[in-house]
Length: 283
Image (cartoon, rainbow, N blue to C red; front, top):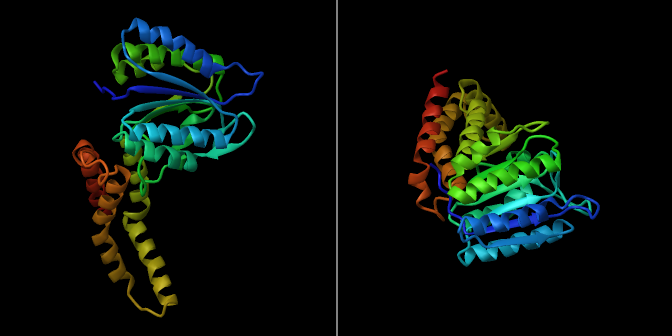
């Protein structure tokens, strides 16, 4: 079982006046659910019209997190392949959203869960860089365009199960009992992102062909600087450095300096990626 630590639910809504206020409906639905479960969960409904307002809300959540709140963030707005779209048409791209969430995730000890109730919410994965800290521990969002009412029903079931058990496992299984008419719900953990992104990186750079291509690029750069070094020597240097590259990305992505316990918490993922380096080089 995967129990999450959270003690605040933030529902953020940015929809036009003529649209169904799904964030407000969800918030009102959850209040009696929390009371019936005898589960203390302070909740806040935050309304914003534009990207600037969202940034201000994120700053408030960060300040609260630094004071001890363990937030769960639920965002109701429109979305695209590129990021969030707010009521007035302003946007925040996935990379910036990751930048806004990252310090919150750090402040709450790498425990942040984010639910994106918007079209293409799963696209946030495109804004993640293993050279920077992960934006959250876990995220759920649709892969495609969605029907707002349909998604609202899904989230009602999800949160009802989560509040009853505080266990993410049964809550996530509630998704499987119902299907979206278009696309699917993507629920991804920081650990899965790490493995996937590093696997793609290593597939490009740590294969024999990738090492050779990297060495040739480095040799060209050095030649432009008036320095001469053989491709073979550069390949050997790059291979020796690969484990250090993996370690550095692991430490940055899992915020080891800020959250030292993550070294043990995610050690299996770290070991698997280091082993993949060796496997790729033998191909």
